[in-house]
Amino acid sequence: MPAPHPDDWDSHWSRYDSGAAHNPAQRWRHRLLLEALAPDGVAPRHLLDVGSGQGDFAALARRAWPAATILGLELSETGCRLARAKVPDGAFHAVDLLAGAEPEPGHAARATHAVCSEVLEHVDDPAALLRAASAWMAPGCRLAVTVPGGPMSAFDRHIGHRRHFTPDSLSELLAGAGFAVERADGAGFPFFNLYRMTVIARGRRLIADVEGGSGDIAPLARAAMRVFDGLFALNRSTGRLGWQVVAVAVKP
Image 1 (cartoon, rainbow, N blue to C red):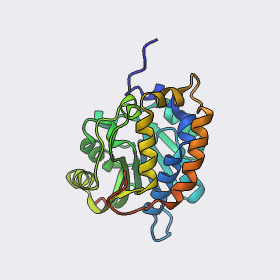
Image 2 (cartoon, one colour; image 1 turned 180 degrees about the vertical axis):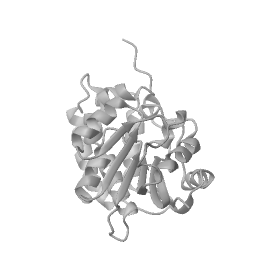
Image 3 (cartoon, helix red, strand yellow; image 1 turned 90 degrees about the vertical axis):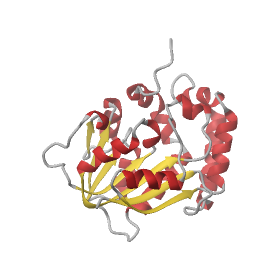
């Protein structure tokens, strides 16, 4: 059977939901996003998750901010179905932001906070996606973005990465899409970089490790993930050397 197209997100989330949940990089990244969205400790009122995937960040946000409304925009109906099971009181809509999707009544210019995590590297025109998503954001909406930096792995290419970023290139992208950039950092030095080097060294074998015929994580890979879970607590969350690129911007 031929491999699914890398932009087939229904297939993607059917295969990788379990693997994503065990990924230490995702858990660490999500903690960075919580800190970036509410640095003063004030919980968001209306949270927009642009490219909400299968709902892992939305589930974490629900536990952190029980009173916030949560709206996810996701290309994949499979991703939305999985997210609804994790966050039953959230709203998850299958929309194509690059095909002219517009907010439904009540959602236009409403979000006080927004996140776009590990999405922009997958699209050919990330600025157009950000401009489209801004229709759901209120003026002054605080937007936290993560994208990968550093070299691409075979697995990155397998799941459809178009490009990786630097703090400067992400800052330029956000400004070009009409956002005022507060900061852009290369987070994760040194242990996230080490994790990424391990992923790159594993090459195409990682695809088999992750897919394993059922979407489960191979035991050796699971053990390595537990080790990195501990090490990631020592990562730097700011700076220029880390290969996890994080930016905070505001819709004027």
